[in-house]
Image 1 (cartoon, rainbow, N blue to C red):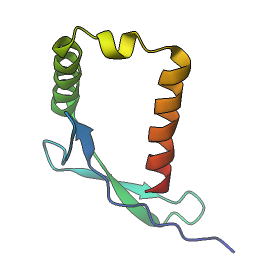
Image 2: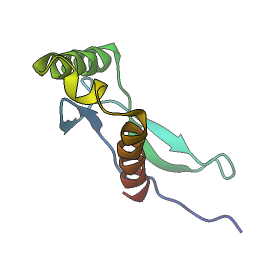
Image 3: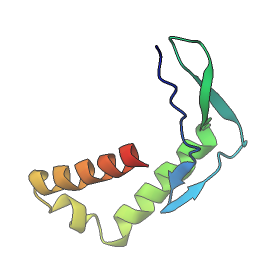
Length: 90
């Protein structure tokens, strides 16, 4: 028996905001066992990547990167694990 899992609808997280990809395209997520579609993910393009990189650079320039770069690696790991846990639960 194969369990059916539905992938939640997602957007791209850029500049502290969830947004649709620039071209609005999505890619199907296929269950490799049944080959049935189980959801869709945003199909980001180079324009989306450029927007994300620009947002990240702007965020780093706001305080010259002092906040994040001065945080010990163990604390950074704690934040990243908490973000990952929220992504997995949603």
